[in-house]
Image (cartoon, rainbow over all chains, first blue to last red; front, side, top):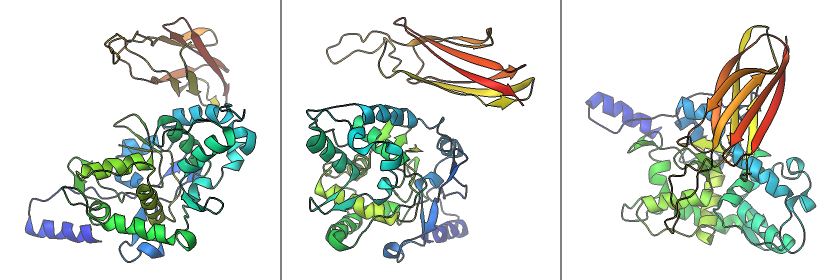
Length: 283
Length: 109
């Protein structure tokens, strides 16, 4: 891999270079029950640039990693509990809760997180989980939409994600979504902002290195929504994308915009084969 | 009662007599310190869990006075020696007078 070659050069020439923070080889088993696939052969559509796809879990310290191994230690589970209540709570003009249609979340939502974003034939659009949740709220429940990256939304995404933990991410990239996927791919490789950085510059070319004080991962989103220790709350994919684009000193796209939906599909597809980890714990 | 308060406890199901077991507790609570101000500049009143206790078969195991600097969702982990089978009783006391409790039984293996 490219960064390993760079390490060798750095040692040979004794040049002061950026610190390295390679992925480790630990195994993630949650609650002594669910063994996660955190390293997998790269799916065919990224095999030309990566040998292996890796969960961001491998790039964190042992202490942070441990938080995700046990649901009692995982601070995100507080929010999952809140979402369990929300699941049962009637809201809106139709007098329905999530449970009115979907019954038990543990069975009805199993496997959902693994295949989203997903093409919705009826609506003729690609839908993220957040879009689907809001569609349910608006059109089935007659309730107010949740903010796309808000706390209620993140918690509900976490609850749905929990039901798919350990299952391999497997988003479809062909058929009706192919054009959107191509757009997402182009965004991934397009440099933006005053710093002229693309997603790939950091997360494909430089993962395993440090970006100032932080470790660069591959930017996989199999662990979202993610509890971040830096802000002590659940973070959604689009909020994270926004943060990244902002850090390139660019005008960001809006969470929930077509641009970020396309990017989410592409980035999710790069993690096909990794286990759904959400809600994960990161720095 | 403050909203969204939920106690959680993790106690092993069984232990050897005289064994020290690790007990983990967490209560979701906003732990408002009383030091912060809202947008209008008014002080947000203090609302914290001010005391946490754990009893085993009626005997006090740990009695903690908690102060405003403790973060949201306070997590307390401690060890307790288990002389016999019985029940752990956990109690949290809220500033507003609410009391939350939870109990777990443990067997001797």
